Amino acid sequence: MSRLMTRRRFLIGSTLTASALGLSGCDALVESDRTRSILKIAEGLTMTAQRFLLGDDALAREFGEADLSPVFRSNGTSMPDNPRYLDWMSRQFSTWRLEVGAVLARAVEGDVIAHADHQA
Image (cartoon, rainbow, N blue to C red; front, side):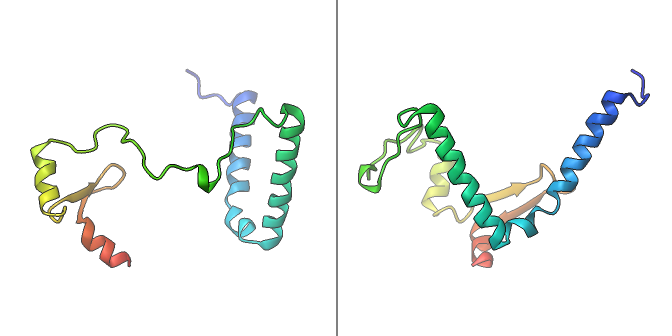
């Protein structure tokens, strides 16, 4: 495969670079009250256009607080019978450790409860 710069590669690279540069300053924009009000207006216009084009019954039905059930059926295992899990549960998960290492140069292991206390 040739590393020669073709017009297509140049246009794709330029587009990606311009997009990344445009998004790099988004935090300051989003925190602005003026930008938020413009986005809120745009959101209303988008919803109006959707309702106009699709009709009122084409979007997913929305539910109010009174429609929500207080009891939900478990999706999957609600009480695992794994001996390791039962041991953790009997100790209120005080011995459970979280290891994070996928994107780090070296793996980090920590106590979740101590971390939660530190964050509070």
